[in-house]
Image (cartoon, rainbow, N blue to C red; front, top):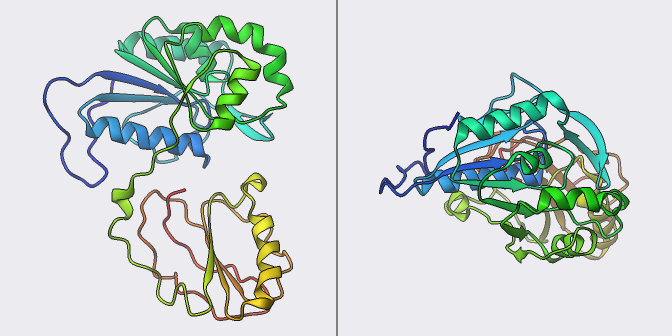
Length: 299
């Protein structure tokens, strides 16, 4: 069940000094749906593989034809569940629990790293089944989570197995402290700058009039694209030539938002490489935002 060592992000061979560990990483959300936790887990798996560790990632997978890395082990089909102000695709139940136990048993991990251990998915199941060193990373920021407050007693029994806690933000740490108890070390999300070190600017950008940029999921209202479009419409009359560049995976939920000035350019690719396609020429100025082109971006 353990996957072989992965290569480094820049294609070089991993270190081979014999000190590698067997690391199991658990992602509670569907791997085939764009999300920050999935991206974090994937980047972490690649980074650990580049250091010479053997990595296996367990996560739900809705589309069996979706391309996945060699280190991913599907944990079953997810179901959409309203969670943390959005719709999360989670996997739970007896079948999934059996898969989790088998993955942990066969993996013989030196370390288990569980993301979002309080999420009612494979992460919580992994906490219950864990029998070795466990590190947990908390991503959720929700100060008014009734679900976490109501289930905090049941969660504590599972979270007691965690040896080290990490929070990706102060808000995530505060959510943990207020609803579950205990504390966590604050370690923000990392970015593999090496992937973008030699990227070339898009032709014509940022332009003489300046530009604004948005990088994130286009189909997630909490990311704030609609707010940025509204701000752009207010700023553009006072900044002739101002343009907006929008990049990220997903279908935009606000393509018709009224923005009577300038141009909004949208690239909506979803791959994990920073290269761009041939259709990335920014459109000319227009009265409304123009959604155009595709680009391979990492969000």
